[in-house]
Image 1 (spheres, rainbow, N blue to C red):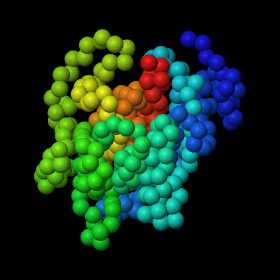
Image 2: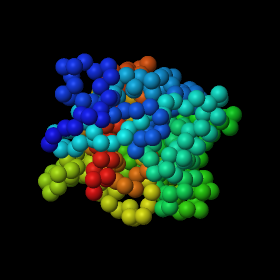
Image 3: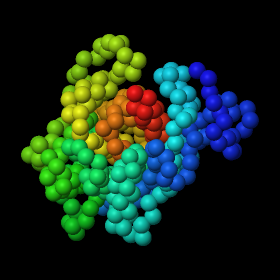
Image 4: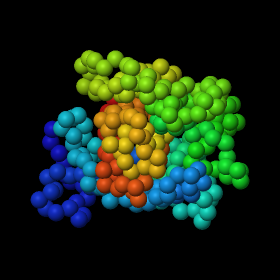
Length: 335
């Protein structure tokens, strides 16, 4: 596999590293990419929900690591992403918390309508509300499927002052009239019983939602067969692929992932770490590859990176999750 370096941007890259180009050499500023990164630097919703502040620093800290992730040609997976256009549109910059959510909703909708894939980096999990709103209001046809990969259900009511917070995004979306009118479906993947109250479980099920518990994932067959190059090898990957295969071909999907679904040993930099299990880092990366290569996935929402708690390990993992999603996206463009 030969590499063509002619279109790469090596600005700031020392000469001795230019034979191993990373993601930064194809990362552009603006909205012109096939995949567009959006930062949501707000943690007000987390604080309203009683969580630790710090997710407002997530997007800027991610940008310290993302350009150094790679390589563009992954020899293990035989995937070359050097021909893709990846852009960073910067951060949402609303003058108020509510304005920021409106801006995010509109930007997500516009990008989906243009058949671009937005990747939203947070920021608190309340961003899933505005990402979901933009997804639902897009003009792309298809039955809407909201997938929440998270240890929590996030279906709490609004806070005591009637305000949105990081724990209520999916209650609002499940009660959204557009979601209801379009016969939308909600799937929860990786929930933990220690993080989900019974009333919230009943709310999800009463609204037609399906919950895949972490216990269900761990009880699955752990003996993969090797039939295809990109067949999942992890427990979570195989369960998730089976779930995707059950969805109708003409649906449209938004993936919302909160980083605390990943075990704290692999992903400590979150507001509420998973101390009683969780996905492994390998599983998280494999899920991102699967999401990227599924052409029904129209947006990826990644929330709750808290670099005030821990920056380096979590920042590198999150950057690699973006990288694996982009590798998966390259597979859909090649098929």
